[in-house]
Length: 275
Image 1 (cartoon, one colour):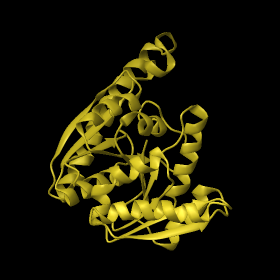
Image 2 (cartoon, one colour; image 1 turned 135 degrees about the horizontal axis):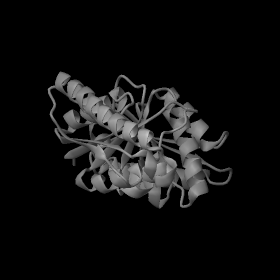
Image 3 (spheres, helix red, strand yellow; image 1 turned 90 degrees about the vertical axis):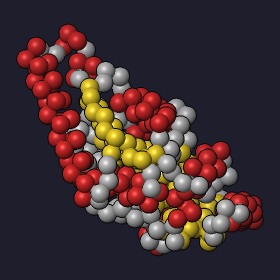
């Protein structure tokens, strides 16, 4: 019960310290192989062939080369500090970055990706659409604040809800939960669902116990928006990681997922999502 291959999804031209640190820490904890994948999408794929002047097209190619080289240098330097060697691949990709990374994730057990600061506009030539990546990967995706400088997985909060997505997330997180010092399973319930929520939490914590994982159980009534309330509970329990199901079967749902993720990431913690 362990991750054997961890994949770091890098964004060339951006600070890779957060995602590199988390991916390396996870690989070391699991004694796993580390894959580093970095892709740039040429600007003409975003703007259209006929709207990019020739000079800008050439400069974009040169910038892609610079960003990929710098990203590889930075990542290898961080990995070397931890005596870890990564299988590196960095190149230009004409397809959307989330699709390319999702294809590459077939070779990994878990994907680690960075989330930029709240309110920052994403660059589709360097950064994948994280909602699309979570939905397409078919693997758990650990999202890490880009500015994070430490990665700990000691205290984990499971955001439980008796749905397919949440059940998938807990199963995907088993290797992480098995090595955590503290695990708490929390369900936020509606006004008439108190007893059912306790039964549901007891079922999943009983299943975890059969895997040798002792989990604290917690059921709380809904008071705020779920993401805000979960974020508050994570602060109360000093959680390093929140494990949650990723919901959203249409574009509107994916925008909602993006907002929830931003809320859960507040405080520098990581979020492990599965769909």
